[in-house]
Length: 467
Ligand code: AMP
Ligand code: ZN
Image 1 (tube, protein in one colour):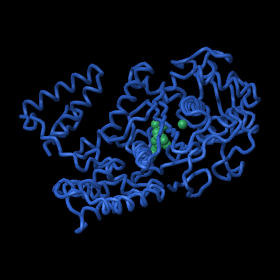
Image 2 (cartoon, rainbow, N blue to C red; image 1 turned 60 degrees about the vertical axis):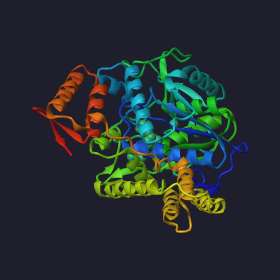
Image 3 (cartoon, rainbow, N blue to C red; image 1 turned 180 degrees about the vertical axis):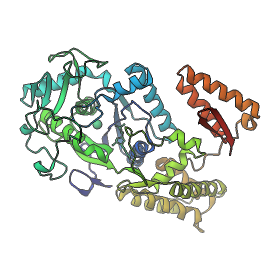
Image 4 (cartoon, rainbow, N blue to C red; image 1 turned 90 degrees about the vertical axis):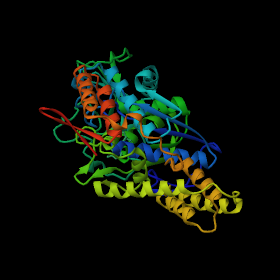
């Protein structure tokens, strides 16, 4: 299989460290808000990669962190803690907030047929490990204390900018406008490994450490969680393209400083999903969630298909029109697949031939749109009987996970709700909201949306429309 490696900027043959086995690490979500459909594009394409590796015969172990501490509102080592801001906004404790959004994240993944990684590790469960690794980095001379924090000294690594040949002076040290420079740093790219109470007096979660009461920086979480669960070598490290710098650059610097040898060979990055108005981002507030799409009558499988039609290394623009086209195409594709009669014996030679074409597409840097073309070719092939077609569709769907042969469940018995019944549900939702039970309120909205009943909140109350 050939994969594009951001580290070498080349498409390379994938050769894992240990034959037949793949250690895969995924940067997980920061759980202070719902995932937007851009985040989900990244997880969805990583899911396809994982499934294809398994399909190709590898034994895969996939690990994901949950960032429930230490992710700042800015990538610089200053700014406010996102978790804390979220907790204040929603009148929850930081742990309640993390649990709520972690559950919401996996509920979205389930709807999109994104497999849960083998190991899911919240950062709050690994603090001892962070302290151990930071202490070791300090012993080896890669870390220093300043202003109450512990920093990684980027001048001590042979090559810091591993991904691109940045000129040092071109980099604005990951600090954005309006954020003060951190005067404690010895070098402009140095980053915090451990914050002490000198930062964020109101920090909710803090732990005792050799450097004082505090909490870990974001980057050290991923290095430690990956090393703890995958050992000294990671085969593929995944994330969205924005993670390349500084997050993955810092992960490499500290992991290799700690291990004393190269750490991860292949870096897989998914390009962003944008709207016509620009990038979709969690902190901007103006983003689309999967539930929102469902409220508009869209299905998660349509979104999965929409993503698979494009290559993961191209940015993808979400618009009503492009989505509508993909959604229509998905519905037609599924009904064609379901209409194939299960007749005849599977033709082993023909099966093998089409399977090879599917693998050829996927082996070429995960070309999902070419793989879908092979699927269309199967469905229209005159020489294939029904049984062979069905077997191929079902085989490809082990990777694509588009539920192509899954019969839709019968409409829920409550499909024909009367106006009075809908008003009752609206009242129950309002009561749930008042009691701050937003999960229940969202559930009621989604339940109605599934029956084609769309709610609109207005200053004078909630109205509904049937679609
Ligand atoms: P976060 O929860 O903000 O840490 O992001 C979770 C994942 O989504 C990371 O791998 C990000 O790189 C990725 N990501 C963020 N924004 C986008 C976007 N607009 N499109 C695709 N992936 C994104
Ligand atoms: Zn990470």
